[in-house]
Length: 150
Figure 1: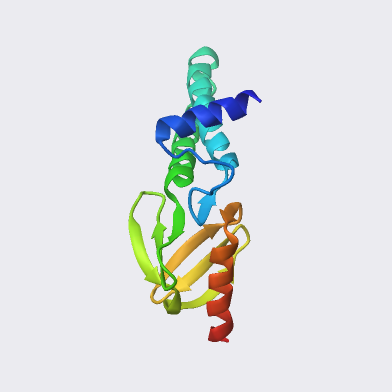
Figure 2: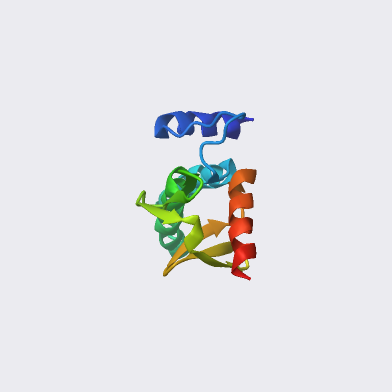
């Protein structure tokens, strides 16, 4: 319960609040990624402080790793999205906030990886995490194009 309250507070601060009725994008990462992104920096700080108390070398090695991983998780949660612009095009935003516009007709394939999927769009790749939330409309558009490819 406390983590959910903190998650909604961070959502408000980052300006990416989500209403339960309307998704914030046609593909976005769920709140679990945000929760991980909130816990890892705290763990990094605790490990950093713990190093000065115990002088165990693994703590000073793991502290920046946790901090960087936490920041990366928050950036992915906030930025990595797909939004359908029209019946023919969609916008893909990377974890760093860079937006690319692609045409559905340019989709050439889909590869399922162990923990994600890669959507091939022309010469480019669109990364979709396994825990991403996708609207039915986006899934139907992708499946429609993939059926035409085979």
